[in-house]
Length: 267
Image (cartoon, rainbow, N blue to C red; front, side, top):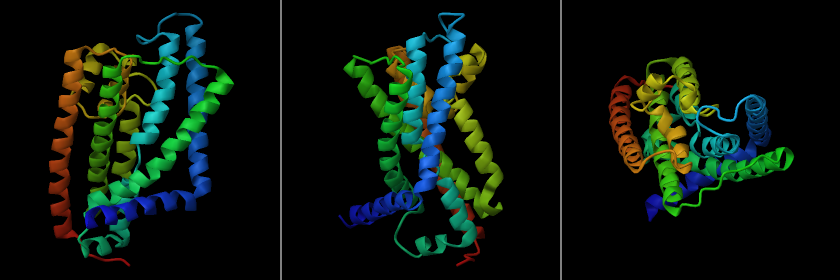
């Protein structure tokens, strides 16, 4: 019970942090809304000349835009910036002196932020739908919907362990700005945040199936649409879990190596 009480307080801390920096939060939501409008009208112009785009019809592509925004708000919570800064500033010292996991601390704080971000994303999507009157594909299969939700849970875990691993590079590279920027760029492009991965050549899509990026957004959404066979759904679960396990081992290894060279300087 003490474990849960501690991390519930950390979740509350994440919640309060979002409310403290309200303007930053509102600007982020405005950015998401502008991105949705930009993608929607871009694809709408393309559909005037063809009825199918990247294997999606107009209804599914508008739904993809909406779902990618919601999933990104739910899954993409970049705690690696706070982790890298806490290593550089020495604020991580207080965590090292307490019986608190660095990973679980930042994950719990991210959960607090996600609660508000996810709720606000539904408001943003509602505003988008009211203005554009965009069609939305509703999945009626309970099995596919449950698989989609479960894959989102796994995607959140995969994203958390990947970005935390990148944040730990601040033990060697001051604040690790370069690795963080590269990771965020590769992730948002190769996860399918801006467009379905089917925009790429078929051979490259096959390569992406062996990389972790698509499993945090595109592949769960493809399951929602019913584009994956039962065998492909099973492999999506299996590969996601495999990547979570692999990245978890890498995280532990880098953390142990990093603590050996950490000078515990700062505040």
